[in-house]
Image (cartoon, helix red, strand yellow):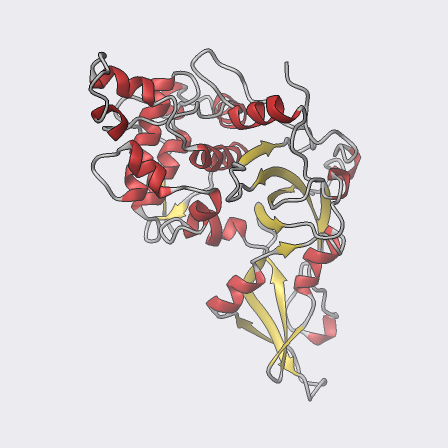
Length: 374
């Protein structure tokens, strides 16, 4: 099925990466991976300006200054994640008959040559936020009222395919096999999971009690549904996510850095079609520390396929990593997945083609969770 290509589209003043660097796929991947959106967002109006009769500068000047302070942190986090995905798989598209205008806007923003000039980044996010809110104008109050935590972005009904239901993001496929529980000699039959069951199987919530590998792979063990024993096949996606909320044990990053995803293996004489039982290595590619109602903000770290944290490129155009910097100045330490809290863990599938090095030989399992900053 044809997929919509939004990577060549541009906003009014910002080129896409493919326009800025024609044919240079290495440059595209480099920018997507290490150049992050600069903070802030353009707005058309603000009550704080209208209600201040003593303010002597023009409203237009004040609005340009205000754009640096408009908080769209979670939009920045979501864009950083999508850009990171695209750096690893530039063909991460959506079928034209499924993509929504909101998803098109997100793709367009992610593919924009952002991260160099604040005014351009503010324009990109201005267009994106207007599309998400369904408004022609955008005020500071609109942004504050919208309250965009990253979880609400990922669960947005008009963004579900992009961040939740895309085939590249689901560990289990729609294909299942099942047999009668009370008749073990019955042959396995191939079938399709209904949408509700499919979404449940792919909704991963982990408390850290089981090891990561056991937790994920038990999804492919047989489960009873009525009088049927049902087995889900692994989709072996490019990416997938886990909502991680440690309870009694906060695991160090060395225990969640990578694992091997399996799938249920059937005996050859039990089924009349071939099962691929190869294991695939998955490596942690991003962590989002989720904010809370007490003022903690969403933040993101990304990693290379070898497990090393990616330090965002610092440009002269504006600020990035402001959440982490302010927290460090206030507490003297950086957040860690070993802290109590809620996190989204994102994993990337590493190729295990014949003749290539075993990923376990180069993944930095005991490497640091984060790299030092200057």
